[in-house]
Image (tube, rainbow, N blue to C red; front, side):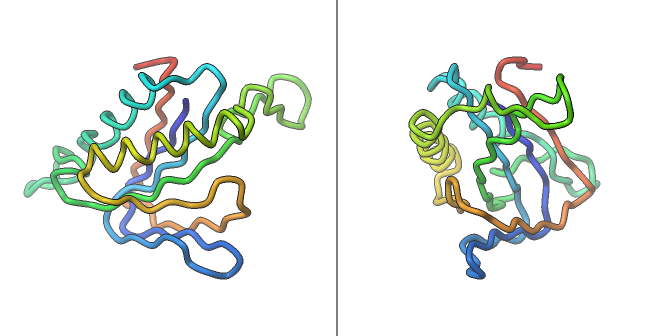
Length: 150
């Protein structure tokens, strides 16, 4: 499982000209799944994201988590995070999980994030053509791969 975490001052997701998610201060998380991802990966990653200390404290030092600042979150599925560009110029998505595996993982990821944060989270729509807008605050962008727990 791979995730791109972006600290935002605002973000939204639009599908067919309709805004389906909209937040102010918080995180935009793009997440991609592969066949080998497990519930353990979900538990580890959702905890990591909810507790990642990337928001400024009173001294503007990144010392606070999403939980601490009571920020919001948008979670968007993005299979292209598993693109392989090793050969040629057309990316291969062979490592990305097919929908029958990815959809249950995506739904479990959302449910676990809601448990971690103790509130409803906003999302995109799996498989939809989405327009994702954001104002990256900082900018702060962090990449996490559950297979390389660094």
